[in-house]
Image 1 (cartoon, one colour):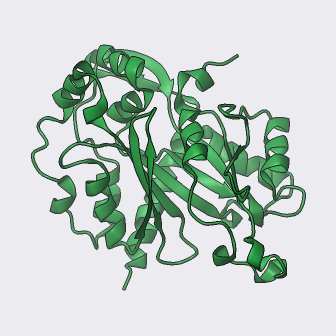
Image 2 (cartoon, helix red, strand yellow):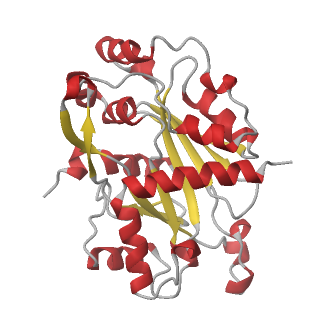
Length: 300
């Protein structure tokens, strides 16, 4: 039986810290309430949450997924991002009220020798999978682990060298398993806000900057999954040696999952997740990743 109590503890911890660190989360929810789209923050459906990781022994997807598989998630489709040198899987939740999970990892072996050496400098002391030492039924222990420091703080110089080759690598070496984003399901919002197009208009009307990589709306080839995202806000990062500098933090994503053609005749009140487009789309996700990239965070 899935451990729903432990999962609740883990998700509450993730969302609490994420909301505290990413001002756009509170801002988006607050303007949704002020415009009457929702009555309270708790009405928003969380489509999925995402984590980034390093694909090296004892870390990466093979390690991190153990936490969520133990909590009742089921591993689904694989995705490959050749240009960004990433692998990813998504995981379906044990009950519909929980978000899907998207785990990605950097193919460290595909980086230059210099970049691999920098990553090894920080992770080289990890000789066993840290998840194996956890009680996977203890939600508080899992929550603490997901917010722990698995390796030392990088220097600003090392961060910059990694960022020049892989902005994903730089983000992970500093942020570790920090929650990369959560996603508002817009298709369940009231009419006028229940499509990505209308919700993007609402967001821009309230001053939010959207990720424009590949267009503000990222659409799957079948036209049934549409996504957008805010541009990651900057956080004041403290590096080893005391150096400080603003870097990209996390962001908020938005997803519209259209009803599958075979269920088009169902009344809206009867629609559930099983009636809508499932999974993810590599082409969409490839551009969503860039919400933390300088091409987006530093645009005028």
